[in-house]
Image (cartoon, rainbow, N blue to C red; front, side, top):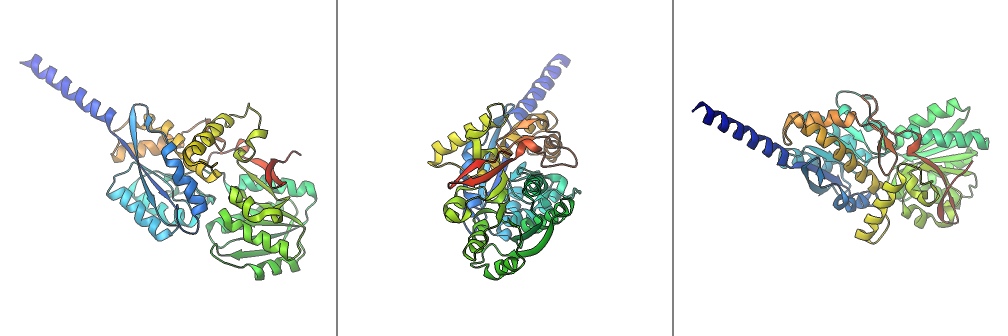
Length: 383
């Protein structure tokens, strides 16, 4: 009798273990595939079919929602994914304001959020809320340091800044102020505009009156184009710098000859053919681009790669978390958060990730290249 009871207990234990091993990991994805920032969100949505479907024996199921570029809709989507779909992690939303609006709710629910957005404000300064957020784009200061090093080399002494009136532009203003002081560069103009604005004539005229040696435009997606073309039309011929927010094909298409000569620091994806094969991200980025192009008939913007990298981070962290708890439980989500924070030397399409308790972006200099627009194309800028 005792033997039968022992066998029954072992069988029950085996059945529970099997159910844990076979439990689906549910991942929510929020993208702005329609609306004003669809140029950012659409390549992210189109990358969802390319995300890993398995990790360490765990099946991964994705729930994809569109917030139509609306921060309020982002919150509704996140709450639905948490309360109704019971997701273990969320990738998104696409825009910086959208992401800033949801991080509190993700933290309260104890669900890791992988944010493919530009602003470092989603992870800095680190606190009890932001410890649940992991960022799959380069932090602003990493990009800015490359730009300011180039400015110093070019002898830039005065700088005009125009950025979006949102977390992306505001954080770039902070980073610019600090680095300008370090490099003995005076910021002589500091202007803002809304992404949906149809004119920045007033702001650009204010910049022109200060006659800066160079102008830095801090705006994501296609909103990066209008300030530059307006300055060009008004006769400005100084050096223009852009952030990694401008790293998409439509920037070149919409800007045309008016963006020729622009310098930016961004992902190696823009200049992949010029990057040495020894770069740990080159093959991963090449394979992602080929798969995306086969599926969608066009090459992806780097914004899509930010979502793809989120999938790689989860694929590495899920087996670690599953060894401690079953998917679908608060314990698993906490273990997943901890595993993401312990990511070491994980190569993605954008660079190599090394997360720590204080750094939830994890990129170093391998996560950026200095690039210039030449003859209507991205080219590696070699010093």
